[in-house]
Length: 177
Image 1 (cartoon, rainbow, N blue to C red):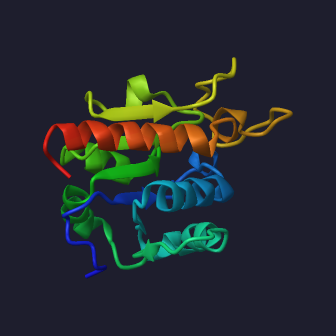
Image 2: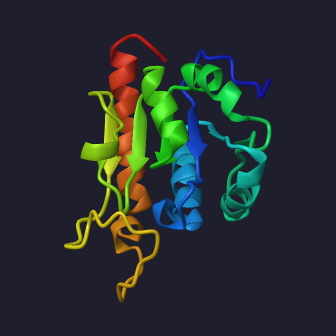
């Protein structure tokens, strides 16, 4: 429906998470999406339920390039099918991350206060990025540090783009888009 036929790679982005402390900043998502589109020609599709619309708008409103925004049109029941078709999911630590891992879609996941050893994604096809701070993982829903959420905000868009492109290259070498 969005004009992506599967003949070339595209990246799904889930920019929300239940806890605010699990959300990578919208300006970082926007920058990563722009770099993927401008630098590599990789289309980006935002997805999520209607309750996640504000987070998606915060990202698309900061983007220089155009993304396909399916937020509000991708309820949880449709996610397995959508995530099977995407080349990769770029996401916060969230439910869609687990669904993508379950349907064997590569994931680049951004982790803040939680621990990927405990909560996944599990498997070799996934990359977890976080910024090393001594308080991590804290599993807190609030952050009282001087640099709030440094565990997430310290992860730079360029690092994320590099991880995404590495995963896409690996997928391409294995013969899947």
